[in-house]
Length: 332
Ligand SMILES: C[S@@+](CC[C@H](N)C(=O)[O-])C[C@H]1O[C@@H](n2cnc3c(N)ncnc32)[C@H](O)[C@@H]1O
Image (cartoon, rainbow, N blue to C red; front, side):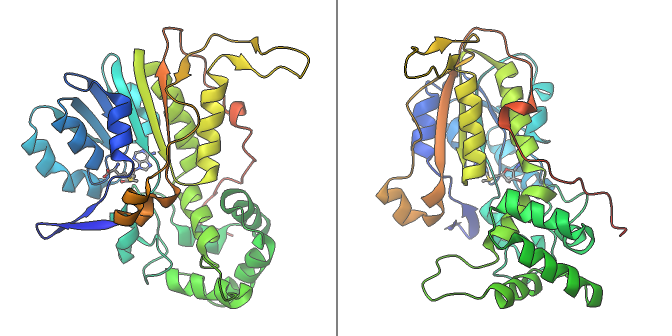
C-alpha cells in the first residue's frame, strides 16, 4: 500500500502503533531497524527520540533514504547490508531490534523489479539487485528441484504440474517476463470464480523467497538479534506469511526456556530463557488500520524481551526447514 505524500509515494508502515508501544521507552534508545524500506518505522523511532541504525539490502531504499539521514542528522545511520549481519555492523549492544520482513510496496509496485505478477516486468525479484534472478531459476533449475521449491516455499498444491509445464515450455521459449509466467500458470491451473488469489501467487512467493534466501536471512537475523540485544532489550518481528511466522514462533518458543511436558508431567525447564514474550501470541491490524492499509491484512507482530542469559549458539536445525537445492548457475 502506498500513500501520496507531497507528490512522493510512500509505503505505509504496518502495525506501527503496536511496534512503538512495544519498544517504548524510545527516547535515547539505540535501535536497529533491520528492514528500512521507505523508512516508516525509522522515522517514527527517530521522532520518538531514538538513535537508529537502519539496514536494507536494496541499494534503491538506501538512495531514497538519504533525505531522512540529512533530516535527522546525526541520529540516523543508514547502511546497505543484510540483517543476518546486524550484530557485525553495530558496535556494542542495543535496546531494540525491529524486523519488518518481506518486500516493500515500492519493490512490489515497480514493474521493473519483477516482483509482481500483475505488472509486466523482467522476471527479476532480487532485492539487493545482485546474484541470480527469478528468470535464472525458472529457466535453469531442474524440474524436480523446481517442484520442491514451489511446494516448500510456496505451499503450492500443483507444484509438480507447474514445474512440468515450465520444463516443457522453457525448451521452446525461456520465461523472461513476469506476465508470461503468470499467464502460463493461469492457463495450466485455471481460475475458478470466487478464487481470492491469482493462481500464480504461490509460485511468485516461492521464487522471491528462494532468490533472496529469505528463510536463511530470517533465521540468522534472529540469532544475530539475540547476540546484539542488551538485557531488557526488545525484539519485534512483523511477518506476512505463515512460513516466516512459524519460524519466528519456533525461535521465540525455543528461547523462552520452556519445554512442553506431557499430560502427566508439568512443564519442565530445559535451557535458560534468553527471551520472554512481551504478550501472548501475535498482534494483528485493527479494522481501522485495515481500512487505511489493506496490506496489513496478513501482518503478524511478535515482541519478546531479552533476558540477561548468554546467547545460545546458532543452529538451523531448530527450524526443521526442508532441504532445497542450491542454485548452481545458469547452465543446464
Ligand atoms: C516490508 S519492507 C519494510 C518497510 C519499512 N518497515 C517501512 O516502514 O518503510 C521490507 C524491506 O526490507 C528489506 N529487506 C528484506 N530482507 C532483507 C534482509 N535480509 N536484509 C536487509 N534488508 C532486507 C527489503 O529490501 C525492503 O526494503
